[in-house]
Image (cartoon, each protein chain N blue to C red):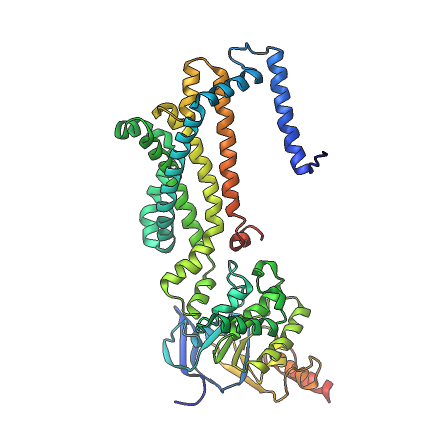
Length: 255
Length: 247
């Protein structure tokens, strides 16, 4: 059977293949000792070992659960707060400086408090993800609300919309494209944070697995964890990209 | 109370210390098509805002009887809704789904976009979007149509075409119309009465009545003569010169 690949599939495949070849060459040339530069074969073996023992799946589930919980919490609180700030100038004046302060504070700075307040496990990690994703979501939603052309509200008034209909039929659909873009960014951020948080405040999860491999000097398992983390990050983004394909938000990306 | 659907009596309005109108009075009769032209910034759009009760006058009375629909200068179709959904906004008082679908179909064929009901506005050309805006405003049982430079963003040929289309739509869906425009030809081709506004504070410095049936040829002598008169009124052409040409 002949498989036809378009250049949009072929080019990225070639780049990945090139990277793999470079990895093989570097490990064959022994530029670094095997103990600090595992070969692709060693990593593949490590992957099989981790998958068979069930640890990989457990870590994956633990990390995904934390990211999903923290992310969903931040979306369901951040969007309403952003809507409120977008509509109320007083609220904006009062709260924006504080929100900007927290937004610029790395969530990792909260790690010590997260452990002291919530112990070790799911809760501190969820808290850290929330702190990473909440503020950008608020800012993005607020900006999107403020940039809705006022003519849409005039039209809504002309056609007798109630306040709740304005929210559901004008404000929310008008901000949807920008909010979806910001969700993609914050989901990526949340995925970065979960790994870092689990390294310190976790007893399971992909970040913990990496830290554990480092402590056991199992560089093959460490690379295995890195690959899985990268792949899952890409998958999360691919899933969120599907949101941009909804017909009623296409307008936000096509002009 | 008079029988006019739109009437201003001694209306004054200003933005802060800037007086836009001082004791302005004007009336629009039922079914009449009035065009308002004038220098930019003279308060043409503000006048429509007063009619639609988006703004309140500082003094004087405004009478506006009947349902009002406005077509804005800039795109105001909801981009997240299809053409049909946008038109349905004007038909929300019809609760029967089948009847609403029929009325949407009627509006789509009025603007010759039968195939585009499920299309989103950003997939249409500027001229098509304008036609949908007109259809949305004409759908349903409104009485008064306020047009704020509806064709100003279009290219010249599309504008010419849409003038005729608007005339045809009003044949089928008669309305009392106030058109605010910079386009003097547009005013002369469409209006029963053209009001030329002065600089701020705006007053009506000239009123031209046309009894020619719509749609009117752009080159019809009466249209051409009206264009000349408006230009002369706005100080852009000498009145005696064009009279000599026409003689």
